[in-house]
Each structure stands twice: as structure tokens, then as C-alpha cells.
Amino acid sequence: MSNFTKWKRALLLAGKIAIGSSLAIYSAELLHLQFSSSAGIVTLLTLITTKKGTLKLSIARVITFFLAAGVASITFLQIQSEWLAYGLFVLLVAFISEMMGWRATISTNAVIGTHFLTNKDFSPDFFLNEFLLVAIGILFAFLLNMFQDIQGEKKHFSEKIHQLEQRMQGLIEEIAKYLSNEPTRKGIWRELTAVQTQLQNHMEEAYEYEGNTYSEDAAYYARYFEMRLNQCRILHNLQNEMQKIKAMPLQAEIVAEYIRYMNQHVTELNEPSLQLRCLDTIFLQMKEQPLPVSRSEFESRAVLYHILMDLEEFLQEKQRFLEKEGKISA
Image (spheres, rainbow, N blue to C red):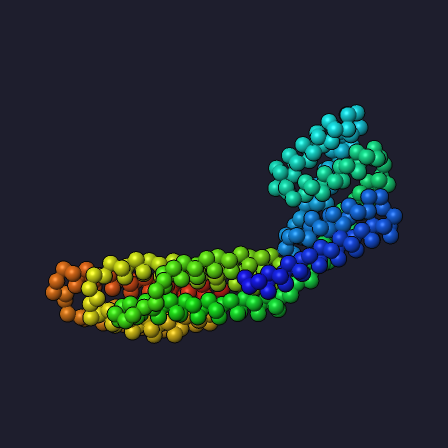
């Protein structure tokens, strides 16, 4: 992720938190609610999630509010010592929330618990006061999280995909050069590792995007980057195979030429069925080659077959991705 993108996202989140929290407090004050600042805290704690996360967390906050209010009415009325009563209250609320998988609700309910502890008021009016604080905080968090630059995110991912494909094409071209006994760039395999790290970062961004949109294709980018990451792992296997070649056989040029052809089609929209058919032709062509005359040549030719199988897996990975996305029929 570029520094500009990081700054943009950080500024957007900070702005939403500031605006949402302020509006929540202002609304609570308009309704003359006690502890109105707590509405802003609820907004802040709820806004730090994605859209889908906000919706799930909002539901959990409402449910656990009633649980926390019930626990507060029992513990604070039965135990005179405030520190002991509050400790038991937090213990019970935290345990219940953790068991229900709603750990994120503990902080809000702990704040609400201090209100009951301070006022010692368990009347319906005060229950309503506390519920409205939670509801207002949730409402503004939900509304502010609706503001997402979805088109900007799509453009961002399209640019990342284009840059990634260029880097992968560069790596694959170096593989072809190696098999053709041509000079290759230094540090090429370190670059492959760097591309894998970059892909993992892209996947994290894509999962965040997926959580911030309800569109049907929300998971596309995450699955796409996962597919490319799997392809990079295959290239790593291919690298290990190439290093086993002691003397480059003449047939390596056939494989290198095919790799150059395949490399032209390492793009987002390409459907690799044609490249797979051409690869079948290469397998047949290799079988028609004269038999090796030495053990060294035999071993090198065997490695070439392994490389071809890696290339086949490389293409099949893309084909499986397209089938899952419904771009082609299985």
C-alpha cells in the first residue's frame, strides 16, 4: 500500500470517528440524556470495524446491553461494596460476552455498568436512558460507515493488479532467459519472495474491502490475489527444479520459447485453455525428441518435464479461479 493510500485511509477513518462521535454526543444532549458523552464512545468503538463488522457488532451490542443491564441490577443491588460489585459485574459480563464470541462488546458494557453503579438507578427511565446512548452510538457508527469510496477502491485494486502482472511477467521472462542460457538479472528469486509478500499485503486490503461492501463480487479481489500467490509458489517450485539442471539440454530452448509465449497471456482477463492446449503439444514434441545419450542429459531432460508440469499447474490454477468466479464453465 502506498503512503498516499495509507494517509487517505487514516484520514478518512479519523474524520468518520470524529464526526460520528461528535454527532452522537450532540444528539444525546438534545434528548437530555445523562452521560451523553458515552454515546460518542459507543460510536468510536463501533466505527473501527468494516461495514459488515459494524452490522454484526451493532446487533451484538444491543443483545449484550440487556444482559449487562440485568447483571448490573442484580450485582449492584445485592453487594454494598462498589469495587467488589463492579468487579463481579465485569467478570460476569466479560465471561458471557467471551463465551458468545462478542468480546468487542465488553468495553461498551463496562462503561454502561459504571453509570448504573454511579446512579444506583434501575428504574425504566434510566434503563431507557442507557439504551438510547447505545442506540445513538450504534446509529451514527452505522451511518458513517456507509460512506466508502468504493469506486476509488476498485480503481486502486485494478492498478495493483496491473503492477503485479507486470512484475510476474518480468520474473517469468527471466526464467525463459535462464533456460536459453541468456544472462539473467541478479536477485531475481529475492524479487519473487518480495512479490509474494506484496500479494499477502494486497490480500489483507482485499479482505478489508470485502468487509466494506455488500456487492456480489466483493470477494473477487481477495480470491484473485490468492490465485496469484499460489502461482508464485509454483514458480518457486519451478526455480528449485531449474537449479537441478547441470548442463542445459537443447530441448530447454523449446520450453523457453513456450514460456515466452505463455508469458504474454499472464493477464487478469486471459482464459488459459489455449495455452494449456499448446502445452499439450509441447509435451508431445518433447516425447518425439531423440533419446538422451548420457546420464546427465537424461536427468536434465527429466527436470524439463517437471518444469512443464509446473507450468501446467500454473495455468490450471488460473483456470480453476475463473471456473469458481463463473467466468468459464467447469
